[in-house]
Image (cartoon, rainbow, N blue to C red):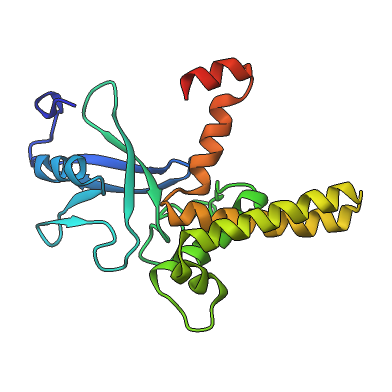
Length: 220
């Protein structure tokens, strides 16, 4: 991106829309000057210019609710920026997922465009796993696995995969569901170990959708 082409306002600022790359939900609107935009590009985390405090700031520097940049777009007039982000925690200081949580119709809140319930469950479980990795808790099964290392985690993957196969061979639906849940859970732990998110897997599946096996194998 050539920042010299971006049309900053007379005050040196440009509006920045922040959108969740997984759900498509608009999270917030803030402003950036050239330094904030460059800092965003350099660090991979969203930075803005605070008009009230007159200082550069990184989203989540105090709350921990950082926004990892996945892509940056600018509009046709080059006077508005869009950050496509991976949001940690919530975007709004009120504790709401998005700053746009109220409607002009005072009897209702603005709709949330989060992922489907199934995706949300995976995201919620993954969030707990991430917390146990970053903040080890005594007696926690997940923290214990991380402490024992990759070999132990992979051993559990193998065990749960085997038990899922046995459940399928037994043609027992309840057993299949139970063991698959265990397999997915330990798979999420493996993803977390390598810093991979469920959204990364969803995107890969989406990329493959409708393509013959040979096509996505060649791209890999």
